Amino acid sequence: MASPGQQPVNGGVSFWYRSIGLPRPRPALPGDVEADVCIVGAGFTGLWTAYYLKRQQPDLRIVLLEKEFAGFGASGRNGGWLSAELAGSRDAYAATHGKQGVVDLMRAMRDAVDEVIDVAKNEGIDADIAKDGLLHVARNQAQLQRLHAGLRHEQDWGADPLDFVALSRSEMDERIRVAGSLGGIFSPHCARVQPAKLVQGLADAVVGLGVTIYEQTTVSRIDAGRAVSDRGTVRAPTVLRCLEGFTGSIEGQKRSWLPMNSSMIVTAPLPPDVLDRIGWGGAELLGDYAHGYMYAQRTVDDRIALGGRGIPYRYGSRLDERGATQQWTIDALTALTREMFPATADVPIDHAWCGVLGVPRDWTATVDFDRGTGLGTAGGYVGSGLTTTNLAGRTLADLVLGNQTELTRLPWVGRRVRRWEPEPLRWLGVQSMYALYRTADRREARGLGHTSRIASVANKITGR
Image (cartoon, rainbow, N blue to C red; front, side):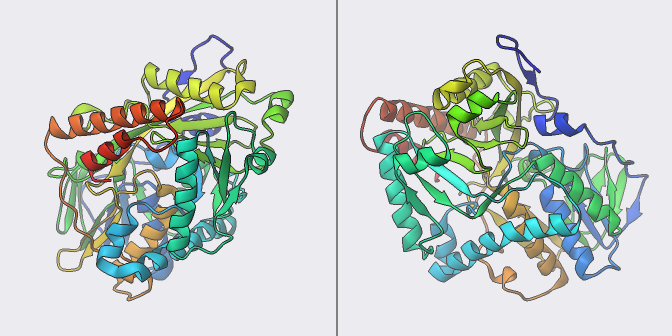
């Protein structure tokens, strides 16, 4: 544990893995093999897809290929929000399937929260799950305006009055005392999760069903009928790419989904008097209405784990080195933690890490399967993937098996998105976007009173 003034552990994949220990690697691909289904990427998307495929058709020979170990990427590094938030633009979904299609997807996301909880219970996975809901706090007048606009937006899309409940400042303080709070919104459709425990438990459950996971195997190319790696080639009539932020590692996919960085820090366990001053007695998840938004949870051992974008993108779609993040980002997240929770001023920061999430050009998720080629993919969750991966995995499984279901009719199925611009344009665009967001947040914090026009310019730059 770090003491005040000492540097926290940086990287090591994530604090979530530090708390349970890194898993023992499974064997690598032993050479050329044949299968019915080959899934590239053993994160949540690949694991959920394999889980539901095997549950529906137990005789399928399913092989998962993973460069590191199952759950190495965002699946084992995220903020632990098992939420019903949509991964992308409702307008983009509505453009092809109308308002009802979006309503169906929203309902499916809410159901997916409970589906994950049920699977964890049935499979005996202890992942510190607690469904106490989600709070978003407004800390200045501009954010408060967005809070009320967001509530109206949810109601316009058919949300039940109990799905999103506006809270006054005093009502917010009764749940979590955030410095500068002017009010908040509560949604019951969210649960806290220790993501590394969940993904490792799911990997074990998938193996228990008879799926083979080959780790320490680097796939470089995916073609119809095969996945080519440094350890051999897997030939299968169905090949699914489930790599999210690591999609650019595959030949020809560099500009498909941008690997956006998100970083987290975690405090040491909060002393009882500090926890009392903050008043965070439940397991509610916490977010805000800043443009460069934050996300947080109170862990099962009374720490605050808090994340945000930091330095959002590395030139050329480069990836982090086993979760190590930049000092600037650690300092920024630490300052935000102290600002929101002044009682933590003397509580050391224990660990910092980062990971990448997949961002399509229109910031909206996709599930796709081409029956003619046998190639499929799912991802582009833009940071809302913990629940979305389950729904995507179930949907991809139905598509592969040829089942016509409510899931296969959801508006994210079969979407086509244009590719990201070549460098240096995409680096300049992302850096500009977040510089503008940070400027907008600073202006609003100084009392602008309404959403800064600078944020609107940032949205137009990237098409959000």
